[in-house]
Image (tube, rainbow, N blue to C red; front, side, top):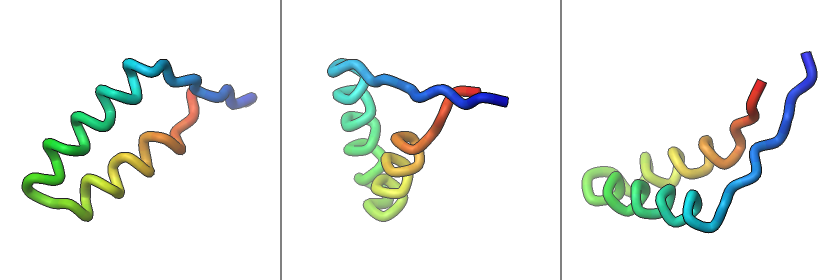
Length: 44
């Protein structure tokens, strides 16, 4: 099955960063892991 890349808009990145900031209030390490994992995801 061919994988396709996900192209993020500026507003989508801003939402991701806002989510990470919120998560970081309770767990900075998990917030960083979350952002890294989301950015590496592919659409099948």
